[in-house]
Length: 493
Image (cartoon, rainbow, N blue to C red; front, side, top):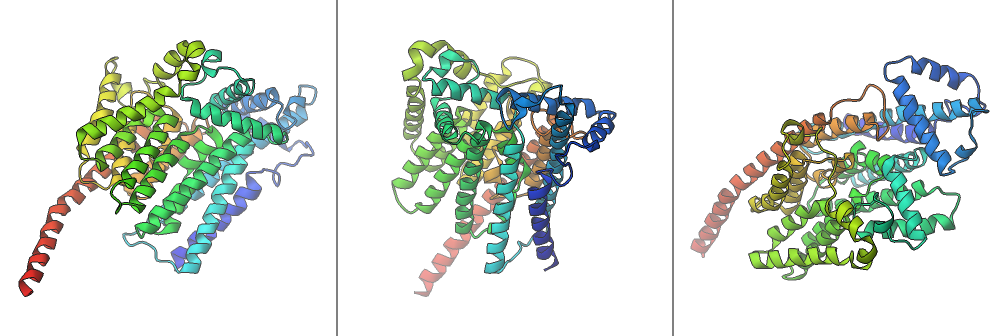
């Protein structure tokens, strides 16, 4: 009972913090007093203070460049206004850090002990609504408070090209994906043009927040089907800092690809008794996930390998998925073939400072990793399909030779359905790393090596492999037990 009350009180505290502190107005007034100047002066004397100040100054420059929220009117003739905005952004960064640590405490509290918390129906509904309210407010306030980073600038450029009817692949090297995402950006640009008071960066990230909310809905449907605590799933995914920091601040769209896979998994489990439709629907949604972000092609292989027995059929469907992906580039090929080849097919994430690539320096490692992504799914036999998809994401993050901070969101959604000590360890380390990263909130004192996350994801991967082996070891014993009971019943007849 005490644990339940503690969780509800922390959720209410989080709600208060989200509404008031993330907006910063109760603490830094807009009367342009000396308070912001004093704050900045003291902060600049700290070890990481100057770098953090420069980081947030860049946020103000970006807002000024894109004429967001009156920032274009800030200039050196009005230093008090500039100091106010700078202090407000720094304070919001600290509020985000506090919010994240409260969320991590909630995740740990909800995961302690071996027995799951049993809630009454009213308590479950209330807690679930509170979690959804908290998670949505956090996402929207963060989406509004920050402009973002290089990726958001790229999305601005790409949306303008789409709005003018240009060929994205021929016009800019800043796009590395299929036409699906720039088509969505073009539609979001039209929405923003209809509502000019909303800045484009907010519209994009509000859409990604909606994607997270829909993902949560399907995770809850899967959890309900598997008799898993709904508040627990909501907490582990929707209030996981890894999830909302990468959605609301970074603004990359890995979560859209993950959503397609989650929908496919739910429909497969929901229609599992049917002979044809479950596999077909799962293949379609896994293909959609691969088309949106082709770096998750291994999830399509996992889904095909898990649900289809004939190898020729697996190969045929995978080849068909690849053909669909390639066909999407045909309308843009004549003018944009150089950009498509160089920026999409030949694109490689940053390497050399994360994981195996930071320890072993030879070019062939990349090709060995790609071969591993094709081969690994075939070693996952007789394991629950959701757990297979989780192992696929963890294999990718453990052995990848190129990394982007947005990749860290990949295992969180399906991982919330199978929370373990590895999941908790990863959530803690990855959250702190993302908070301190200069492409995110850049909270001082939280900067450490990328390999800290690699160690965390490797631990999680090993934990999941161990649990999978234990599950597989139990299967023959359970089958034998069922067979014994059948013989016993037959003998009694």
